[in-house]
Length: 534
Image (cartoon, rainbow, N blue to C red):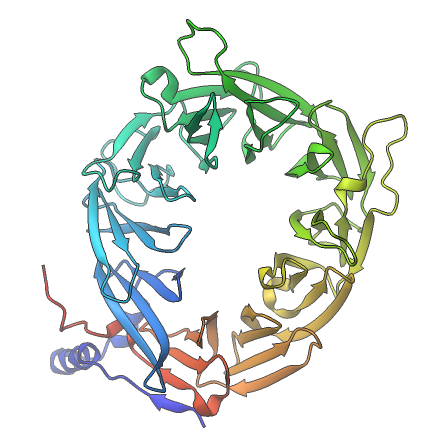
């Protein structure tokens, strides 16, 4: 029996009392108008941005005094919060406040109420890019807004440098074109000095942003992707920095750019200026690498004993092209699938009986039930007759996958294919044995994996399912309501239901049975009227 713990909190009670005294109960309509976004996971906590209340709800679950619990905190943002993001280590939360033009920075470490500081931005940015290393935050404009805009510089880029602590105010620069996306390079060394860099993606152009620059000449470097502005526009669709040391080209890094037009990949090579009187810190050169017909996706592979190679998927036929970056040679091979590839995943694995981790590439199409596994290290590109041999194999899923994810809990030896947007189950791939286990689950709204076990909830059915991923055997339990999302933490499983006021069911991860579960309602109203107003 599921234990019901309905929290009729002071906030909800006060709202009900007010609506009873002043007219018809409009609480249902009020709930529907709450603007609460998709949660971000923060080391076991969940952070929901409530734009209606201008707050972040931090939902915590666990076991306290041998009892399951769900708690929540309210963190005030600034006015009109827009974008929310987190650091890669999940210790810091960022919220862009468009109304007051500030950035709220929450320190999420520890169990106490998080501390918050603000950085003045000077502009109402609506896009945020957080450096994976946690050293920089870049802010820009999407160009879209439903608000009345008096004036703004769409090419403006805000820069928040976090390395020496939180600054009072962000810097800003003006790009050559509006940034459609921002990609950070991992930390690297050139010329014997540590460097940080990012790339802004714009139509027919890449702007290199030197985050260590001390002068305006080095801060921004524009690299055109067409010969003339009169040429057909080429939009960057994928950008990859390769900062791995290269014996063939020492003291250089490369940026590879794939666009929505053409049959090549642009390689931007960056190295320290060789002239002593050079005005700029870096020299930049551009190469074009043939990547087959209509490439739609690429991967940069640094293969031990082989060198750097690019793998590009053909957008018109089930083929891929492998490019040797050093020599510029390339070769195209067929894929054992029945439609042009849609996407790929690169993973590492230790072959049975092997003593060295090897690179593998999983390729799939949303229109084919076959999935290809490529061993790129064993494919010969150079020579008169490039060969793939037995290095490309196929696994058959129960139907065409809509997306595939790697299950990192098992050293990337297992992948999960979702079918028809999780409406009709999923397939578990054992990448060591090339075995597929089909698991049917009509109406699955979310899945989470914990070791050799998977947990799922259903969009239209009040049930919770536990899958043994080794055997595929499911066990179904009851829930008080259909689930929207499910999260796995160290000690608990947390199910979020569709109720806008915050409805959750928490289960013991070691014994996830309904008899020991607890259900909490109106979590987002917790402390609504007890909070201290500014």
